[in-house]
Image (cartoon, rainbow, N blue to C red):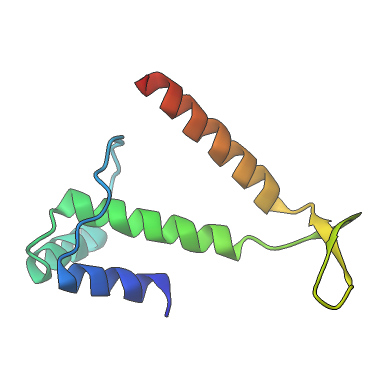
Amino acid sequence: MNRMKQLIKAWEADSRSEPAVNEITVKLTSRDYARVRALAEVFPGRTEAQLVGELLSTALDEVEEALPYVPGKKVVAEDEFGDPIYEDVGLTPRFEELARKYASMLKQQKT
């Protein structure tokens, strides 16, 4: 099941997500804002801010999964058949490295 469907199921069940601790301001088109307001009415257990945060989190997960694998020259492992698995020299390692860097920075700011 894709993540958006899982998110909608969670909204239907009114399960609570991890509380947001960081804040940014975003500008939405009128169309997108109308859709967020509609979702808030369809799922009254969620605020507009919660919905936007959860949608963004789900979208970021999907973007991360969609980053293309680009095989490099270095063999980093073997699969179950003994075939080589090459290092990823695409965008994924850089994205993951930067995400860890910023997560670490945010954690240090809170302590």
